[in-house]
Image (cartoon, rainbow, N blue to C red; front, side):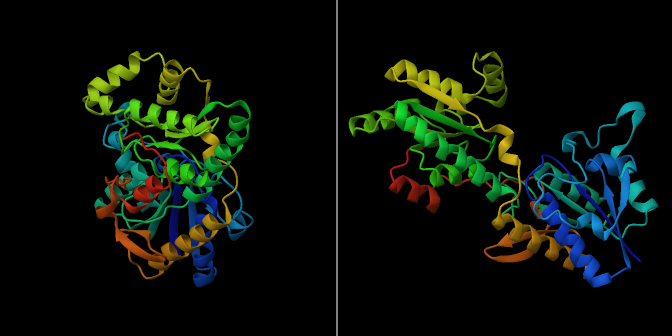
Length: 358
């Protein structure tokens, strides 16, 4: 009897269920009744506290189009994994104990960057791990595409599309603040797809004077409105020169709830135009996965199951172009896939006339 553990960790996204379904269907098809899948509830927390359900094939039926995660999720910061909990609770040893008591052959882990770091830690502790790249940010190192990304881009793009009509009707400047604290892939793709005039990313510090100049150019061209797609982690050139401690102190003392409101105030004061801020927020994580993500998730799930069948552990399944390959977890953990300011997509966006504030 093959015994497989499975958990989803970190922030949710649209295609977690579709990916788990891909893993499960492939395993059931290969092993028939000779496989058990233990679903740990609320991510690593379930593994720590032995909180699981023995899943059935019917649990994975009808979830291809369902957003969120049927197992639940929670955030367990990697930096605290080695820090004893209440009454000296050892999180890592507890997870290892659950794994061994259930006599698992492998633990399947679906998650983003922090989740991948913990997955690699468990690999180093001797557990058989296969992981899958989940994040709407598309920032996991080693893979060209993460599941959840395209669905989030669709939602963010739709928000910008809706803004266009009201912005043009009232002649306003609209700022759409999109998710992405450290990496701007979501804002970049949604900005291009939504026809944003200005895109501000964490990887490309902006000069507010360049942003103002871009809006002025549009005004001179007779354009009655301008739309900015701003990543929540966008940063000015001046702030980018500060140390992390100095920047954190400045943010804590700021009267603005986010960078978009600061930019909006600067635009309003300098140009005298009406500025509105739109924050789609967690809607970008919600709803059903789009058709692209359903295919991506099904393929990644099947590929992960194939690694289990072949007993190839310690890998994350990843896209390289249109091919799925195993990437060693030790090569993935602790790294981010950033937007390269000199990349082809940035150059092409600039050729289209999009301003990045640099």
